[in-house]
Image (tube, rainbow, N blue to C red):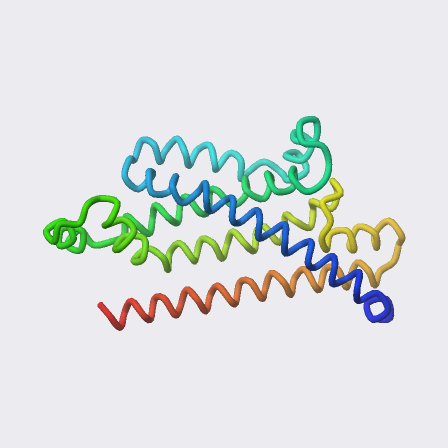
Length: 209
């Protein structure tokens, strides 16, 4: 672990770059995915088209997406963000739609009887009740993005993948191990943190049921 101790500043910078990639990619994916998920829950035909398109994007290998984007966006941060968004959309759209569909019709009828309009009902009742399922989707999306962001080092997007690929090209095993361990630790931390949030929300809803 000599390299990690002597170069902790480079490691922290790579970690920060990795977190930035994941956070920006997740935020954009939520801005796009949540409205599409709401529409998908309301309109089954629209859901079929959206899930087919987002599912197709999800199956494309990361390197292939990067190769397609480089002529238009070049190298660096933004093509990596587009790829991260593409990989998160299917999960977020599907979980938002599933969470909304699982709400009991009795609850929706009661809200309508109390004079809630569709928008007020959506934000005051439906989305809060669907949050545990949505957070479960975000949890999967974040872990996926942490993994894909590592490959983004191929297009000079920075992050922990840089440390790993430098170790491979330099035949420096410690760099590879340190980069892989920190990346795995980040994924586990995100997964466990969001799992706790999800469980807390489910318990909170059960108490008030």
